[in-house]
Amino acid sequence: MFASQIPFSRGRAGLVPEMKGFRMQIVVASALGWCFGVRDAVAAANSVTNPAEVTIFGELVHNEQVLQQLQDRGLHQLTEGDRQRLPSTPTVLITAHGISERNWQRLTNAGLAIVDTTCPLVRRVHAAARLLVQEDRHLVVIGQPGHVEVLGIVEDFPATDVWPDVASVTTTEHRRLGVISQSTTRPDVAEAVLGRIRELHPHAEIRWVDTICQPTRDRQRAIEELLDQISVLVVVGGQRSNNSQALAERARTRGIRAHLVQTADQLQQDWFRCDDVVGLTAGTSTPDAAITAVQQRLEAIRQQWN
Ligand code: SF4
Image (cartoon, rainbow, N blue to C red):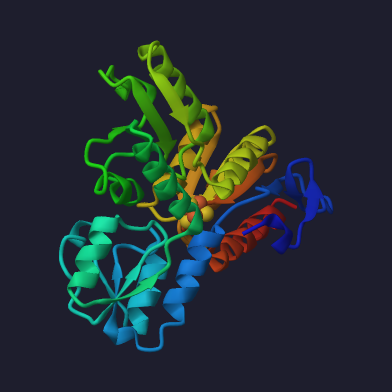
């Protein structure tokens, strides 16, 4: 979701409401909420005409409301931990996170039809991994071990090292390294980890393919701009959404109060002061309707300070 969809006037780095005598302000991040990959995947799931015959292979988005809506439509869903199990329906829907070639073969060998909603920018990560391995490089992924997108790569190339942060980087005996990142890695984290890899492998020939997706970069830039202006941050997102948690955590590390809510009724008036500049953002798994509802509730709180 981009802020242009929200009826606020444009501020320095986001959207600021007209003041009309209010002192509390609300600033909306210039990029927030669903990325196109998630939006397309949810649209594909919603357009399935025979939901009872389709199983979603893992969580389509890490948002309880959306998952409940899909379940209400009659779609079957495997939990992330259930991915080793073969779906009992004739069709399986692959999420935007993608799967490994090995897993794809396993599903098709079992006779399952596939609805593929893998994000094109995740395909780019897989293509980069294949290219680097073909170049006879030892593959390194900067990302979260165990994350479904990373598993989709590592399952095809089991020797891969996965390093989520600077502290996890170790020395290897390999002289040729190929480094990619999970598509949603924070650019500053990727840069720091890459620096550490170079430091620990001064004699290795290292090729880095930047596979961080543009929506992640947009959201990262937007949150930094927002944090420069605000005194308190509201993040709309599920409690199990890593991305939403990370946004709140980023604010706290800069000494800014932050609240993570999934629905508008979770907002508490006493979180805000009359002179607060309130930032509003949302994780990539948060639907537009939830963001709009929270924004409207914030606006109601703002008006009470009049
Ligand atoms: S790769 Fe980027 S655009 Fe694609 S689904 Fe993931 S976060 Fe969204």
